[in-house]
Image 1 (cartoon, rainbow, N blue to C red):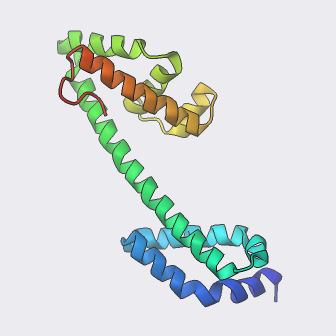
Image 2: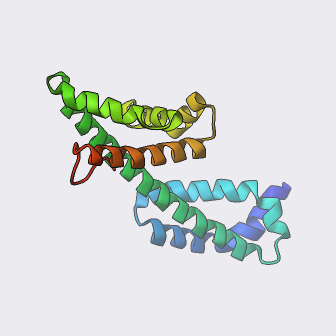
Length: 173
């Protein structure tokens, strides 16, 4: 038998049912649970030698399982929030149609008041619908930095638009 197969049988098989139970309980959606479980197995497979040296490998495996489940839930919440933000940006741009050139000009002016990278990030994310990896490539930074530029830019844009009276009750989220 191959060494990885032996490690799998020795380390993972004894806790596999507990792993499935954890994923199912935390994720709740059966389809998402299967995807998350496969991702967890891939992570464990990559870390198999490290896990084998751990004083309590099964506890380590279960910790990886719980951590990855909560990461998946956070990603899902972020995707939902991004969809909502894109819909709000689309609505704002529909309001800024040619017959509403004053509003369109005010939005463009507000975006131009943002720092350069924040303005580009906001335009690329909300208007063009680019993902953070693409924005990072354009801005020549990491995806995390692109996410930060976009977040800070949206916060400043919301303030600017609210101050201008364009979105008095909510602004851009």
